[in-house]
Image 1: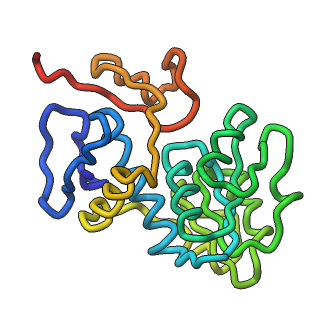
Image 2: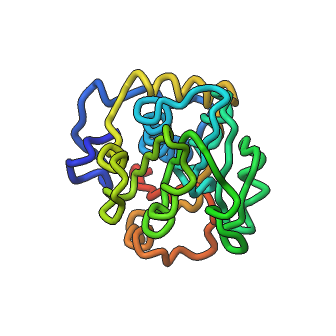
Image 3: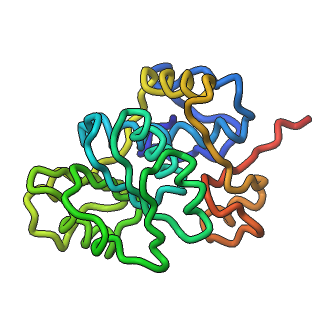
Length: 222
């Protein structure tokens, strides 16, 4: 995983450090492997380094079918937590298959009316979803967001809620083992060639799967 603050990831070659590199899971294609580092490390660090999620705790994960959210649902389930997640209608079944005990269709229901007294909220959506999430926490609950620092909340826990993922060879190796063992799954939403890379940022990709992560492919010249 590249340094978050360094430009140049969309290139044939990029500069990194050995501590940011781990072996590619042998069971994954190149495109599948490319979805893993940022998404899986973000989920791992949110749940275990920042939220300190414990077995049997109740967690609400916003965006359970996204690149980060899909890993978070699986990891929280494997850890023995009770997992509630939000998803769109077409992805409810997928998120249940990933291990969610409850899935709330955000297109037809308001999570704040259905969820109460959770130990952890993991937000990958931001905006109004983040603002409304404080009300569903226990008094001792923790909220972690990877979208932006909360600006409208007066809750003292907001000061420690936002984080940016960091490279970790040790964690990547553990994640790779889980992937090769079939204990984790990753999903390529769409794979697009480098010359069309702008589409990955403008949401103009034709016929995406609607879940997982978008990958930009770079020709090796063969």
